[in-house]
Length: 365
Image (cartoon, rainbow, N blue to C red; front, side, top):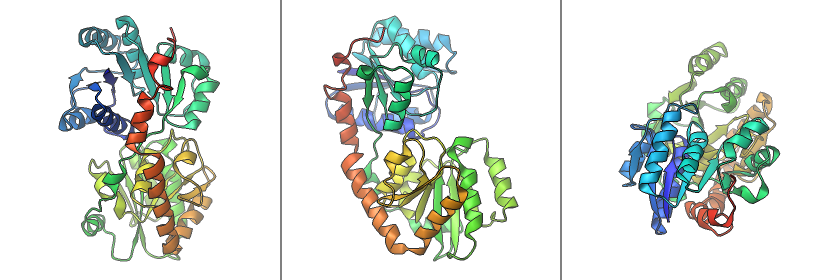
């Protein structure tokens, strides 16, 4: 089968990385793949490094109708059996439109759990024969918005578990961020935007004080809240233990160097960052929100607390700081769960399984 993947995100965040995982696995299973993406984007570079064929098309967003026209033309020229649209920014609305123009069946992956109006959802998903939700939480949202059960499939995101079994140079990593010997490294990773909830992590860190030992908080990711979060850390008096470390393309090399991973998102499709931490054997603390309830098993692979409760978040972090054995047991259970339920092979097989295949479903047109 020849599959044309459309991913219009600029950076190699969790979603585009999932596309690379999927394409590699599909290629190993004998399928031909081609990725359409913006020139110079994170997935453009990653795909070329992985020897995955790429076609560059610039996309300015959901209103970039010329992109839909150019994509429809390219679909007609390349003649794929199916178009798989991955990202929301331009790829789903315009990708579905382009596939319809070219008269090629299309599927779409939905990775976020935010609410949208029923009429918007009806227009967004109408061209697609299958709508793939990466979590039960997203699937519930899609059902609520009128997506028919026969068009809906749940395929959770995957994590390269073997990749995270490799331990990076933790001494060098800790030195880079000023973490002295004996200090616990509490890390978070995600865009610096409101729904990621970093403000609650800073509140929790301020409440920890010195009673639970020395620690450093490392927040990885970029976003427009950077200055606001830096100001919050300073006002809370914790600027000396908090580092807003920015986006690191090589962060996967050092996830195993974390002692605790905190994911305080208020809304989350699934939480790929939490999956990576679990694969690296790091216990996860987070809010019981959206798909994170599927990424983390409370009291088995991590600790989940009520959303927006900085006090409960602080208590959960403190519990792990005080109990090295608990950190180890939760981390080990998380890694085993990733190996069993979130492997790349499992994700790829579900994409081509008869129950998921676009051939088994009538068109949404």
